[in-house]
Image (tube, rainbow over all chains, first blue to last red; front, top):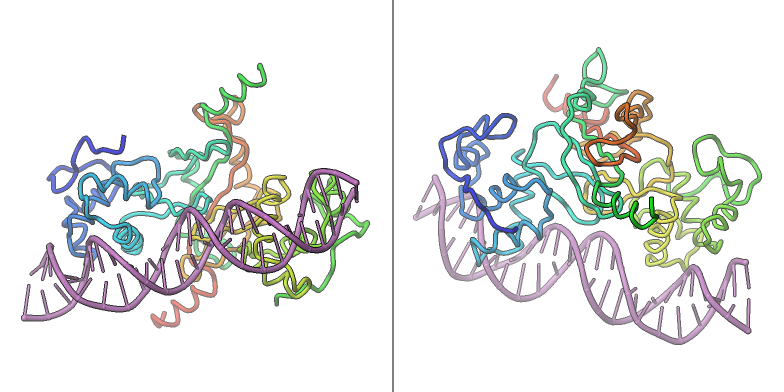
Length: 170
Length: 170
DNA sequence: ATGATTGCAAATAATTTGCAACCAC
DNA sequence: GTGGTTGCAAATTATTTGCAATCAT
């Protein structure tokens, strides 16, 4: 399933609440605001992330973009993912492991990380989002000024739970 | 400050609540329980972590252990940190960046991550710990079985806040 | 004695960078 | 046209592994 089914690109529609689409109608506009040139490579890399919910690694993004742009290089993917993070278009997610992972969903949400298979699923939860409101005197804890919070929930995904249950005969 | 001031090793005293010390009196005992040989390398690597609160990278651990054991190799540090994680003696912390970081404090706690300087501080908070109690039907969300939660709070540390304030004249 | 662990060196994996050609504006 | 961006190849950085020597039990 490393192929796109529905192009995003320069459509005029608003793609839903919460994403950068709320502020910019198109990738071109997004780039202009960030002072970046609008190149096919960037468009595809961003689109790949916007359509993924699996927090892909750099190499996964590369592999998904390649069919559309065979001459794209891994270095370009590395470079632009970093640039996008710097420009606030995407986030680098902190979920452990020795490879960077990225996420275009910048709305407050959290991650379910399976300790058995390593799969990462999104978890939207109003109550967890509230963590950001740290105290009455503003978002400050000690001398630290909190900008955003992310909760990692470690455990076993449904698939791995089943497997464990089967093995142990439970 | 890469030197130890107070050895831990084989003392008979309990070193406080919450840590593995609650269950094992000495590193030797810890090893026996985990089925690991008690070697000087392992003892120093573990001690380094137990005395750190800065979630050191592999290389930092290596540099801190070296003065005590000049012939220790980086590979040994890599190997044993992984082994310790597997044995449940320490945690690999998920705070982003492209280097693994480790933490001997396995008690529920969270991390303040400075987006400017990258420093990571511990944050103990009863209210954040409560996240683990996910729902009434047990620690399950969707089909996912939650074992533990960790909250990452991203923002600006006191030091970087001051710097920013000075620069902008605020 | 025996098997686990170490240090070393070499291998692999992950990420970054220099630079000439090329493209967006 | 000009400066930013790309692809390629090479360089760095991060991590893992094979193996003989050594150590813990």
